[in-house]
Each structure stands twice: as structure tokens, then as C-alpha cells.
Length: 203
Image 1 (cartoon, rainbow, N blue to C red):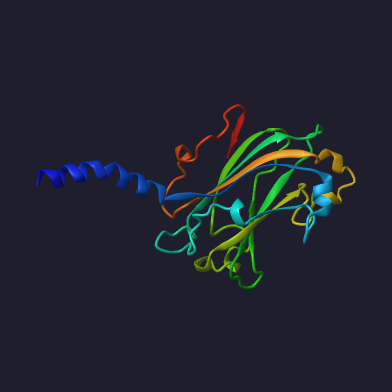
Image 2: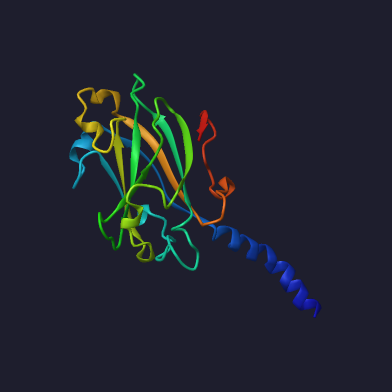
């Protein structure tokens, strides 16, 4: 009996850790420099940065609805703008989920907030409230993410089309998306090595 109790005591922290970890996961964490040449030559679409294959977390669930419901949870979006041209041109990144199986439009997108300068910007977005989120069959999972640099003019405001493109390129960013299960709250302590050097802007 004593051995059994000792085993429970030893395993309890592991069980709690596993339970905590299951409440959220990092979808991807990418730091990259993006130039006008990158935007002009990205394929199949311009101004896109594609997060595919091993750039995604290998532990991304195949089913986002069960046994843990991420589909009805939230996504914590964090962008660290490390380098940005002078001029404070309003900039954002649209973040599109590309599913293994879609319907209707076939994909859905959320995005960062608009930003004018270097810094860290974070926000939480309900998974049921962003553009075309119902066009994704969440039980079939995600195969890639498309990140699109834009201005403040709307959905078609791709930065490479701007006459003043020098206000957008080159840029260096770190973009991280953390999926949080329904009913849970984003826990930043589970995401290691986040920079704390720059001013933080949180919505």
C-alpha cells in the first residue's frame, strides 16, 4: 500500500504537467526576414510566407474537436516586430489556416493587429469568430499556415502592390500562434524563450 501511495505521489506532477500541456499547444513559432524580393517571388501567391511541413509543431492534433476541443477555443497571436522600415506605415499579417479538408471557401483567416513600429503585440481571438472559420473541417486537421503581409486597406491590401513598398520591406518578425482549448486561458509560462527585451503591446 505504501509503495502504491509513493507511486501516486511521484506520478502526480507528471499527470498535472500532461493535463496542463493538453490545454494548449504552439501551432508554429517562426522568426524570419521578409524582403520585397521574397514577396514578389513567393508562390503560388505573392506577399505570402508559407509555414509548412516541419515548420509546424509535429504534435499538432489530427482532430481539433476531440478529445480536446481546440476548434471552439481561442488562438493566442503573438508577433514580435524585430525590424521595420521607418515611416510607421500601418502593417499587419493575415494568418490563414489551410486545412486537410475544407468546405465552402476552403480556408479561414485571422490576423495580427495593425502595428506602426517595432515591438511585441499580442491578442486572443475566438476560433469561432474569424473570417471563414466554418470553411475548415476541423476534425480533419491543418496541413499548413499561410502568412500574408498587408497594409491597412483590407483583404486585398498586399504590401508588394504598394507604390511605397519601401515602407514595408525589408522586415524581420517573429510570429507565434498558440492554440488554447475551449474554456481555458492562455498560459504564457508554457511557451519558453519568449523575448522580453521590447516594449509589449497587449490587446
